[in-house]
Image (cartoon, rainbow, N blue to C red; front, side):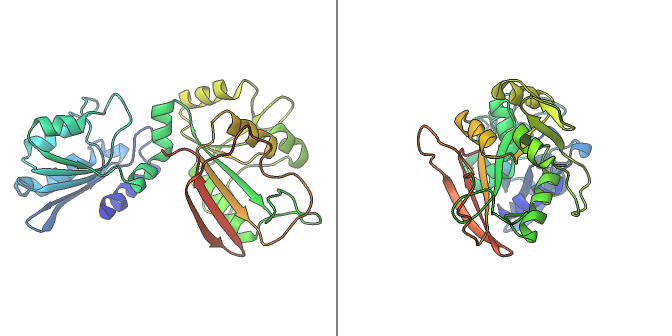
Length: 306
């Protein structure tokens, strides 16, 4: 399954409104076919792996990151192709949340194919933005903040809270998402560019400001939930929220934040606003992790599993 995830990553940045998918076909104790999905290639990962395996697919086991599709879109259903090739067993990393394509597991089982669904966290998170977009009709939102050890977003006498390595990683994050957003308080205080710089970005994210007023950024001044659904309809699958605590708290209160990334600097500020304001109830975080980024520690956790 780790190999299927590696293969799926080869489609990163190419699949547009489709998920990343990787497939590995094993027969007789060896890999006989591999495939991954790339939009330009049209063929799905499963059919690419089947084509490579040929007759060796019969009686084999296919490992695939995402449930084989059960609908006729640009190509016939992958579930039918897998069953027709005589594959005996399919191991699925994650179910497909798209109601138009789901049902491949049941279709395979009805055809006599043994199916195991892992519901693997890595498989789900590989497509976390797409899964949120297709199932909830809004972008997947990551709230990123640089904070002191006492949870404040400013340090008196310093321009930056976090270190250079953390700031570089933020530019990489911007290059990977569809949109970056701040509130008008941040616009007035910092006049941010929100572009990805110094990391070889092949494209720039849409740069948004939520609120009312004058800005060089793209202004979104409607209710948050309406704006999020509108952005999703425009193809925005992922949004990096970089605004201050006022906007972030509004997003959290509205249930619109999926992931939290906190760059914790080795300093106690002692003054200034915290990264979140008051909430009606505690937030339960899932799968919290920590890693060093230069002198900082990056804490990451999910508010909602994809």
